[in-house]
Amino acid sequence: MSKIEHVETTILDIPTIRGHVLSMTTMTVQSVVLVRIRFGDGSEGWGEGTAIGGMSYGPESPESIRLAIDAYITPAITGMDGDDINAVTHRVEKLVRGNPIARCAVETALWDGLGRRLGVSVAQLFGGPVRETMPVAWTLASGHSETDIDEAREMIAARRHNIFKLKIGKRALRDDLAHVGAIKSALGDAASIRVDVNQAWNVTEARHGLRGLQEIGVDLVEQPIAARFHKSLGHLSDAYEIAVMADEALQGPEDAMRVAAERSADVFAVKIAQSGGLRRAAEVVAIAQSAGIGIYGGTMLEAGIGTAAAVQLFSTVERLGWGTELFGPLLMKDEILASPIEYRDFSLVRPQGPGLGVVPDPEKIACYDRDARRVLRS
Ligand code: MUC
Ligand code: MG
Image 1: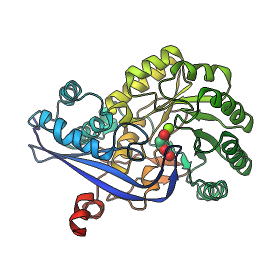
Image 2: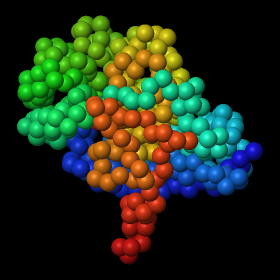
Image 3: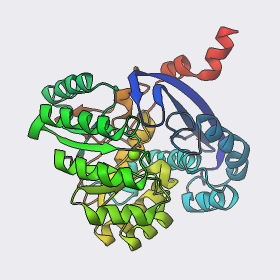
């Protein structure tokens, strides 16, 4: 028995290395909710819940994640046995509807705690890793074609990334296609180019958009239309050869089942946070694999803890055909882990050691802690 004694949440505000321009907002800071669970036997576990661009990407924000945990999840699970992760998550699922990022943050801390107590990695708890490295994409989103091209060339030369995701949907379709075309012709076959529209197009724009992207030689288009338009997404993937990926449409296995049954997408962006935790993300993976749908290891641009959790899970996935985009820590100006996740040879390396294989650096937490900074300023 490892009683859940104390659950602590902290919001960190970490500046990004440059403005990250998405169809809905431009990020200059990433706000990360860290969860630390202390157990009765003296062990602890860490989790992370991170949203994108405040509330512009989805219904959860850093503040709502923290509130859901502090006001609802913590009182519901305090005193329960942290070794019984299924019992704890079922209780949370019953008492807290929605809020998948908050639920994921807490569940991650439970897996980390259990792994540390048993002396095994979270990957081991999910059946064991089948790979120690995995391909990792980078997102080009400076807002300027020339800057993006320079950035991509630097990444290729440093052998850090050769898969690039371009964030489009903010500008007029014609301008976006010119932007993507410029990047593709500058990089040629040295890179795989994919785009993410973050739901910005209507169905007519999407038809023109997919035709244009396909002609340019883009490999994949992510969530071109609103998440709720499953059928139209399916028509788009039937009408063009370019791979169509569902992202915002997937909030866990229930959505995955529907998208798979309707064959609305060729690829799933599987996100541990959006799925509502590692266990539910593993179920999304299982649905995709049994339906012959491709898998991409997606991110909510988490810092090191959330990224390590996703890496542990994706290391257990048999067919990870589209690689991952687990580059979140590299988008932030500072690293919060005591020893950073390693990126090399266009891949990232699964952190070794028990649990998530990573631990946060207490000095970095103190440095970016929103509340501590507020106290300092007043
Ligand atoms: C998204 O919509 O996929 C992932 C990479 C990135 O730059 O933004 C995220 C969110
Ligand atoms: Mg996306």
